Length: 371
Image (cartoon, rainbow, N blue to C red; front, top):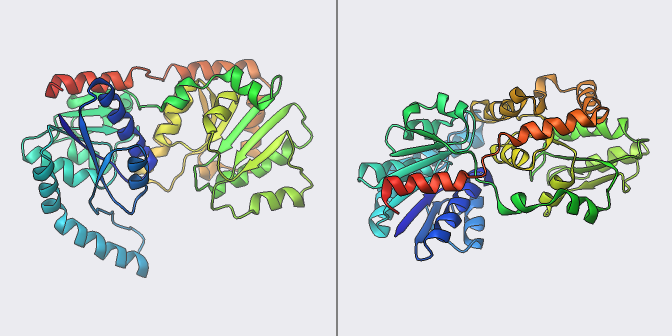
């Protein structure tokens, strides 16, 4: 059996592809699975580290802001698109897959579309609550459309093709134990807060966490872990020093947390962006959260992701246009001062978790393709 998985752009597209690949391989150890993506993108490192074959295909998106640099990038995009169809056709002929799965990113478009034209079985997985343009277009041609939520199915061009399955969650999240994590971190009996804005960081979220840190500087029963991201350049720590806030066992700042599942498991309150996989991990762990969606994403999809939990009463969502020192402190205090309610919010969040996500995907691929 041969399978191609097309994924690129962000870990939010790549990790679901890897999870699907690992699940299929667990059922069929002899399956030959190859990924297609950009060699310059993060997919190359993640995929090859996981031990899968990788085929390079350069597909990029159009930049909407008209700057000189973006105009140059758009010319490259046009050039890539002109050759995308023929490149995809060659990859498919050479590898001869039984199935092609797209999990998002620009590279999914030409590979999945060409496979459908060639009569190869195809499927896509949409992680976000509001479907991206590429997957909306592909939904017309593919055999199966997997979506994370009921809301995503409503936004798809062909909702009748949709199978709601949730988002695949990495094993480290599903196996992280809250009590053991709190013991390892030495935070038993404390209210634990974890805030992060992604691997690169988020300036607006970092600024909001300054207000929270200042507000909580004298609260010794709180342990706050904050991940500033790689773009912070020491600015957050400088703020702490200027305001005589000491990093201690009650407030710890990291550029990046490699063992973040342990910290998530230990936390009572999460403050974060609304990437699709982050929302899935929050639901998997059953955590109360304050969500600050990034407005700088296609179709404002982070807002729609976050509203899945907010509408359930599992999260407080604050849009950036409404994000002030006062609003973030008010949201935090509403959780900190009523931990019983906060725990109940986490229990509600857990209802959004779909533990059988990968089984649903595999079962339906089996029905479609006989794998």
